[in-house]
Image (cartoon, rainbow, N blue to C red; front, side, top):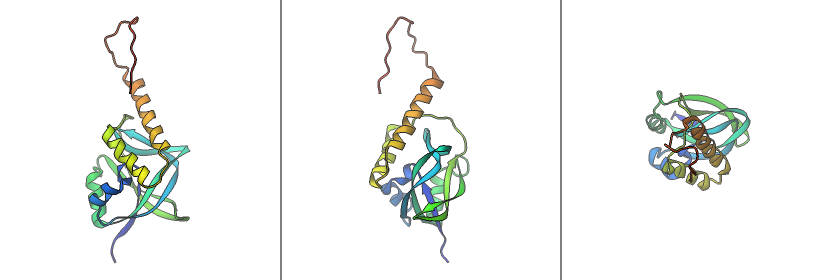
Length: 162
């Protein structure tokens, strides 16, 4: 019997073109909302527990070769680990695999990486407000945590632009 597994994507792997290249045997199963988690950027995407939140996800069916390709791409087991979750897929509880980041601190993604994910959200009819909120939290967190010294005197005006 051929190995098949359901895989939860929430970051760049919701981008259809990227997944077609990386995992040629994969098939989209459905878009779902994963409750109790939120999207977080640590340079790259992960999801973290938050009981008051939810995150849009794309459910893929992958085979063993696809999973091997994803393991390499995700830096498994060093950067990301794999966990199994039971979530609703098409109205039924199903066991799905997800990659979760092992460590890191909140920091913004590159513009390119963000836009790859945004394109995936749009291609799959997902609400981009969740993506934008994660970006805003990462930018805000970096500003708070870094407190860079711009060499300005207290009486000089300084305005950051995005």
